[in-house]
Length: 427
Ligand SMILES: NC(=O)c1ccc[n+]([C@@H]2O[C@H](COP(=O)([O-])OP(=O)(O)OC[C@H]3O[C@@H](n4cnc5c(N)ncnc54)[C@H](O)[C@@H]3O)[C@@H](O)[C@H]2O)c1
Image 1: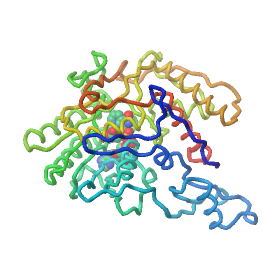
Image 2: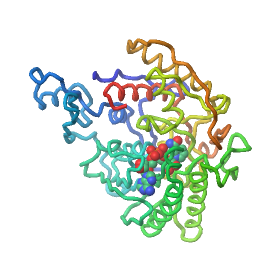
Image 3: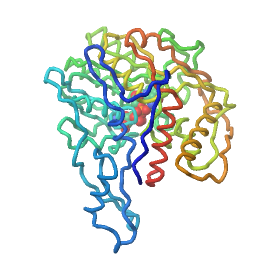
Image 4: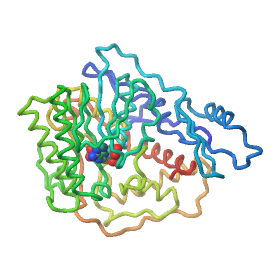
């Protein structure tokens, strides 16, 4: 596969985005977007030739592969004739900042092998911190962070947060919890255990080590809201016994626990209420609307909208979320903070936008379509909220954070990511 063409990304004001992160609260977290992209917009495997006689030796293929692509990637080789992969280890890691011991933090990321976690890990690693990922790989995968395996600043532990865990650390980003409806509904009791016992264990760890603790809560704590947009002071409208309750109520009790530890034990806590986020490394088959639409459109299948398509959603790009999480962790704001993008779309409009961007990328790459995909409507699942939009005034005021990525720019990158995955046969 040839290396991806450079993508020019413009922010909401039309300025080019070349870096993400910022220098704020005494914490410099700016990194180059190109280096980050070299970690996620890349093939996992190189395809070996079918013809054994003409096929160069693996070492040659390996050398070709390294030259043809970014140097910071795994160079495993896929052999279609035997359907096998020759795994290799990394020869070179991306440069990470050299921090003085006083600036280098020992950071634990639970759920660090998941979609959000892996992007956070990339950022924290590039910034020069020591990162430990704790994950049971229920929905996450080792491949999302495999490019760091072997790095002296990186550790990965297979562990279920429902069980206690002890480690010395300065900051805990507690993300472990399945986030998409099919995954959290797969075993509702386990989701509740993860939310309650997992958070209890990680707060206990924060208490013992005096680490700062950040939990990734969710806009789902607002349920099917009666006020728009939702501010952090809104208490929510949640069905406690519906199919989504294991997640919504799980996160609500996790927030209650977090503030219980703050009041009783003085634990230094941060609560991020994350709204709908999308980006590369999202599981394409977990039923979330962005990945569903893109994969359907790329495969030339009709795009499915549940309901009449008039329900609205806002979509935030992963890099904005990671900026927000790092800003929150390093700020003095201990109240809950909404982190999301307020640009609202009806699901019907959004489906059309995705179709347009997929076509634009396909046309740019000279891909011929046999037909234009249709948008089809199916019945709405139970308890799906009709409308949700963040009020991010608090994030703007206390973190000086605002989303920079337009939905269009984020979608284009995401379409290229899934398209590359399809071309290498892993989607
Ligand atoms: N992605 C979003 O739009 C969104 C929105 C709101 C909140 N969040 C929150 O952000 C966090 C990360 O979400 P995501 O989208 O990356 O989901 P994800 O499913 O991709 O990642 C969750 C990670 O947690 C791990 N995990 C699950 N249960 C665990 C357990 N018991 N022990 C250890 N590890 C466990 C999974 O294996 C996975 O790696 C979650 O807490 C989620 O509730 C995400």
